[in-house]
Length: 471
Image (cartoon, rainbow, N blue to C red; front, side, top):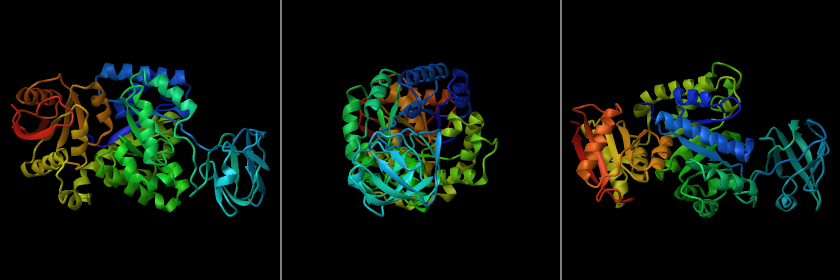
């Protein structure tokens, strides 16, 4: 069983039922819908199609709705694209103008209050670099330091400047209202700046139902509040595109490791994204550097890897998944030998019972060579805590909750199985072992570790470990 999970973005090349089935068969564990490129109705239609497929297949599969959020952008242009030439001067303004080589509309009225001469401003993910020379009430004069072509509605980044935009826009709320009525597992939030914004977003989302919240880490401000963001989120996503614009490009590999480690410390699934197999937009084989990137993300301890354009608009969406899956499987063969986190994990001392249970499952599985760790979980918390330790044994999460069954599909090493609600520990162990055996994870005679809560079915009561021989 491949332990690293794969998330695919649905787009024009993969939005049919047939293509969605092929992505899942190739190894996708979750599907992402990017609202930046969808209407509300189109998003709802895709959710229904995906849910139909996952019900037919009976597989755990997360549906993730990625909200566009508040982003500073340029406005419309006089032509399809304009050339920003090095050494030229351009004015940025929040006034309603049609853009040209000499003036661009920016959809952020407070920009003049946030920048000063010498400030760097980046357009279109850093393809064009400007430097502020003069700040006026109605316009910001800039020199073009690094030129290039841009089209309309391009992103604007202002490194190291605190931008006070709301996390959720009116358009995001329309998507939330519509999608919350469908079979959505996670909402993903763009341009998160601090933990408080996630707390506030959860208050809003909770009025529509129970959904997991994934925080994208793509701003410098988020890095300053990383630990608290991990504490209040149900997942974090390392968005290397904007992160490489908001911070120095050479810092991105270190930040990836830092974010991954912090998320694991809090037993929060961490997703690595952006340009994992970018060359496969056009080519049937990836670069060697891309293969190394996938492997290194796995060695860092990532729970899941995200394909974006590769599966949304690329020419080889299914093949991209197949190659990522094969690369992950090969890397995982060497994970135990190359991991560097064991001393830290082995020295964990805690009085928190669920955390102590998770560590004990890992320790015990190593001592007795357990085939699997079977955890009975209502919310998925126990499975996530055990996954943090990256045990060699399979983690089989049995749950009566369908939402937990699907949400756990993005957690490293976890194989979720739906079982009926049971009322006694003995019945739970018997049912869980039988389902694990029927699913091919264990065989008669295998030794497994079972962990659960007593009394059964109560969230947050994990307090029991048992070594069990499968009958």
